[in-house]
Image (cartoon, rainbow, N blue to C red):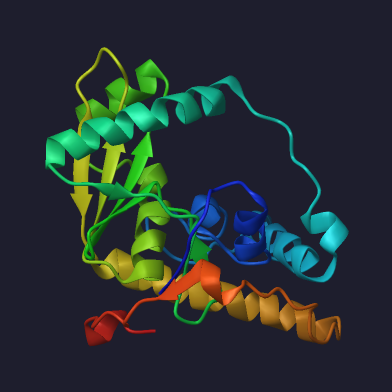
Length: 231
């Protein structure tokens, strides 16, 4: 993978993810239960959105200023959740801007990278939602596409999911690559093919360049994956 350094949500982050399917939107292309490509209009609409980002810079840089109360709470609680995780696991969490796949066509914005093997996805949901996660004791199904998408991007050995809400016990679940991850990788490949088909149908040609300066990125040595998970 390639790691882009900097702050998430700034201009560099927007540039890095322009026109690429990302983990945060994985549920728009991947069915949560089975980890397969969705055949819904939502998936096709997402493909059209990403193509619009590639070919129309004015569309891509349009500001989306809506922030819900739940989103504000999640942003405020993220540093506290990360500190809890670091103390609980006895590790340091590295914050980065964006992670690109080896092919540089899809990526993720991790809440943190842990050493050379792991990553972190931290959530601070509404209290009633957090209670339901505690009762389930597993990775919530609605976040399976996002977490396994991160594994597919980075090739890492594990990804920790943390649901953190002040006043309640936390839920901390370690997720490792499995058959679901393989299906997610296949779904990503199919989705990229859908995007390519649309571009060919519209005869759009090559999009404007979107170069990330070399000093902002670092290539990591490819991770040795099982044959079943190799793209």
